[in-house]
Length: 62
Image (cartoon, rainbow, N blue to C red; front, side, top):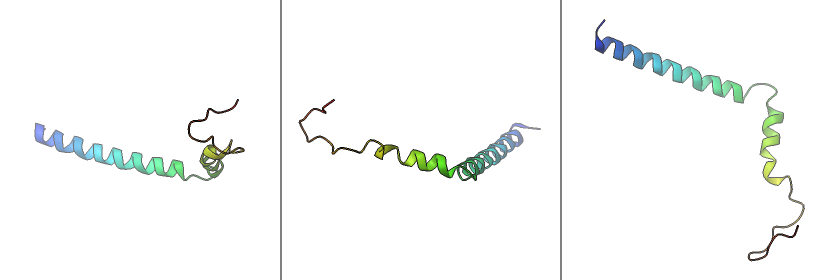
């Protein structure tokens, strides 16, 4: 085993690890049952949208 062989082997193992990690993250994000969590996260900007935003230069009334 020389340096070039170990270098190419580590590059291949790193590539396989990164591809497997990517597919693991994708499967985790699209797993069954995660729709509720993602829908809840998508609604965060609109949760307290009861009143219009204050005009420029006005302080928010509390």
